[in-house]
Length: 187
Length: 140
Image (cartoon, rainbow over all chains, first blue to last red; front, side, top):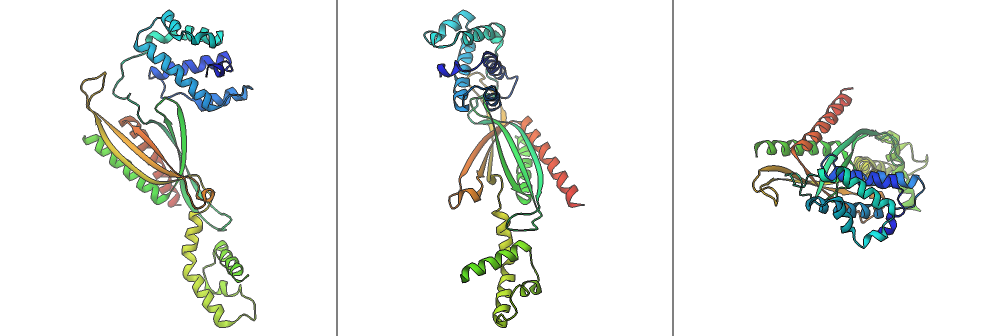
């Protein structure tokens, strides 16, 4: 992965580190790898999302371990050890700078919300539509609800999942959530 | 050839949304056998609504929700907090990819998500707004 880091322009690399640190600080719900990857690709760099995700994971592990052990900037750089020579100079510079500025402030203790073994729900977007016509039925008038769930996976990276529901399904969906909320109240 | 012709006839009826016997009867040519024509029309009318439902169910779409399971847990302790009582929701959604693309082997993926009280409230708010929109549209 170190050779892939080489490909990322310095400002994008800094942005990635920034998002990782903010996520570790619980300031943002997740790391927007997909969106960042698209912007990097648009700038002409040939990197795929799998590689970017791996790099994000490695950096996240590096920063969180350093936070847990209260490492100073020099100790952090030493930890990189032999890996350092494989990293491009600008990457080491960014890591050093980020850690100096923000590293010490990372809240190490995990609050109750933190053991992420499953995805964490971030947001929901919806759309109500009516299918008017299709190749099988000229006059359909079929209503449906489309939902996009934004989820931060256990590694902190943000993914979106979209799906459709019929109106009866939606009513059941809503009912289940109301039930969950009432259980949560009484527990 | 016979099967193909019948197939075309039924598809045409479903596409046009024909529901009356007269509309279907006039599709047949002039010299068509009278009893056969009536029998076919009767059979088509009997099946038309289930065919239409099937057409609606198998039209192209985004992946569909096929199942939903949930559970409420209470987090009692962790390596950093000795005692706590934090309720949390675990939700598992089973989502099936577009049936038209998968043919006979639909791909179902599971999405497991954790919701806190706050995020659950966000979800409920969004769902409430969908419900309001649905009522508004239904009343028009």
